[in-house]
Length: 573
Image (tube, rainbow, N blue to C red):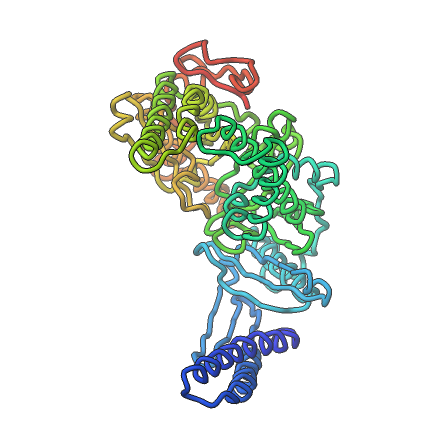
């Protein structure tokens, strides 16, 4: 099968412009150096365009794909031919993306994602929207057929595909216009801050001109010197104004990203679509989900909202390969988010146990040392290199925030285990509570830095095969007591083995029932062990130890609790 004919037009224009531009600049440079006549530019530029356009058309003609019974075959390449066979059993998702122009012409880009890595396995650059949606539906039919054949409902895969019709999706959530505006208002994209500062010089020049005109001359009545104490106020006003501009830009990005967001359930998949200028649609296979994260920044928590993100094996669905996983729910009432968590993973409570209080002292001391180091550096520059006026006092002024920052970091960290899950929380501005099933754990790691050993603390990391590769995105119980860390490490390992045993037993019984032999007996004591709950550290689950769960809400953030009940307290936020 071929791509849409407009793919040839797009590739011809793209490659023609690229090679023609190279010919143009080569002719200009050559004529400037006296190597070629000046009129050469009128030859090389059109010739380069024709060569590039011919290559674009050849690239289109060389590309071919076919959806077979068991594989997706893709043939591509002009100078170097490439043949790729993607087993359909490994295809995790079919993502469809449309830019604004592609939507006008009814075209789409289709990406086939697998669980084998963090990038797109196969891509169809331009096909009709109907064909893209047909590929999505066909892959879903293949999955249903495979499940039906495995369950013994039908004999052959082809017969199963015909026997299992396409069900109607059940809408789980739709983002209303009101909630979209709330989401835009409470969202802040920190990446916009350096983008505006370094990538938009016109905006920077405009802002500096307005600062000079309205603030310095209009309000303050003249020029400011570095020794003028009013300079601190100007610096704070400028910083606040810049952050306000970044917030406005970020709000516009949020509206464009999540416009007309809807989430539905179709078989064992979550189906989503979103986007204003660029339209995305795809699926999140529930059997591939590695981690659920309940997230909320400070404004969202104050208003009673939360978001739910998912991570699947190999890549973040909808993220374009290797990018952050999408929001299964970008913003909704917290209760609705927790209901979906319970529906997917059976977890009805995300309360956690905070780290011990000495971890709070450690955080405050660390922040104070960082501020003092910055203040010392500013003072050295002020005294030895160049006078900074009152600006050298800025880091010292931040010292008053070290203690509150340490407390907030401590108050928003914690962990908990239950019979089947490991929960870990971290983050103040955007707090994330990660829910990891034991059977999804790949590695359990206990870390003790030099500074943690001094405080008898450790961190326990539950690594999964999720799309994120940064350690900070792993589910981590930060700065727990050293003895609790050892117990937690053993509990996670025991939970992993128990869950795997239960799943092996369930699969064996399904096969036995399908084969008609009555159920199947336990082997080597595996079934008996699988039915036992994993060992858990004292006070982690039953509320009898120092870290008993009390479910008191957001704790220090909302004034309902400050951790005074014991060495370690919990919050339910």
